[in-house]
Amino acid sequence: MAARVFGRLLPLSLLWALALPAAAWNAAGHRISAMIAWESMDVPTRDAVATILRQHPDFEQWLLRANGADPDLTAFLEASTWPDDIRRDKRFYTSGSEEPTPTQPGFPDMERRLNWHFVDRPVGRYERLLPSPGVIDQQLVALARTVGDRKEKLSARAYALPWLIHLVGDAHQPLHAASRYGPDGQSDQGGNKMTISNPLHAHASSISLHRYWDDLPAPPWLNGSRLHSTVIALISRHPAPAATGTPEQWIDESWQIASEHAYPPEVDAVPTITADFHNQALTIANRRVTEAGYRLAALLRQLLR
Ligand SMILES: [Zn+2]
Image (cartoon, rainbow, N blue to C red; front, side, top):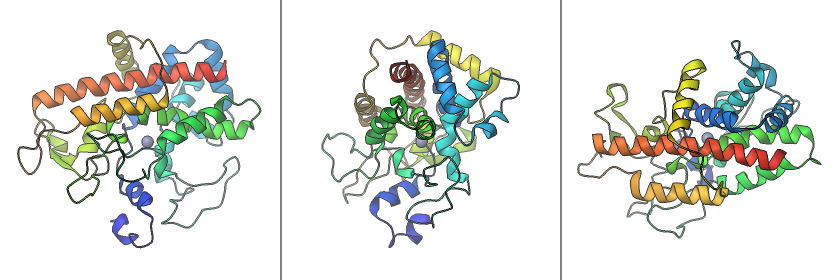
C-alpha cells in the first residue's frame, strides 16, 4: 500500500525498504544471536559494551523490561531489536514518505533508516542488475568504525552500537542479502513479494517467503529462561567458527545460501513448503543465528578491548 501511494514520490531504494513488512529475523532471532554473543564475550568486553549502552537515550526504557535480569544483559538484548522497534515508534520518521520529526536529545536525527537492513543481490548470479537500494554492507563497516573509535563522542558510539548488534544478525539472514528477479526484471524484494503455502504451520499457512525465514529460529515472544535454554542448546550443537570473517564474507555466505537453499521448488503457482525443505531451512536458520552471535562477540572484542 505504502509503496503504491508514494510510488511517484519515492526513489526505488525506498520502495524496497517501505515494502519490507518484516524485519529480518524476528525479535527472538535477534535476541538469540545477542545472547549467544553475551555468553561468548569476556568480562572486559561486556563492561565496555555496557558503558556505551548506558549512554543511549533509550537505556532507561530498556531497563523497564529487565524483570529481575542483569541490567547490562537486558540492555544488550533490547539494543539488538531497537532498529526494528523504531519502525513503530512515533518519535521517528521514514525518509521519503514522512516529514522529519523533531530531533530528541542524544540522537543524530530521527530517521528510521529502513535501507540499512539489507542488500539486494540477484540469486544465482554474482553481478548486480541494479545498484542495491539497501546498504547493510556499507553500514556494517561504518558502524564498526564508529563503535571502535575512542576519539568519537560517546553519544555517537551509543547510537551506532545497537545498529551494529542488529545488523550483524540481519547480515546472516539469507534473504537479507539476495532477491530473485523475474523475467520482467522485477525483484521479489528478498522474498517479500513471494507468497508461499506452508501446510506445516496452521497459523501462518500463507505468508511471504521472507517472513517464513524470519520466523524460523523461534517464535517472536521467546525471552527470559526459555531464551536462555534455547541459546544453551544452540551453543552445544554449534561450536564457535574458527574464523570470524568480515561483513562482506557473511553477506556472501547469505547470498550463496539464498541462491541454493532459500527458495522452495516451484511445482505449483504457489510454492509449497515440504517437510524436507522445512527441516533443511530450520537447520540453516539455527546455524546462522548462532554464527551471528559468535561473530558479534568476536567483533565487539576486537573493537573494544
Ligand atoms: Zn533488521
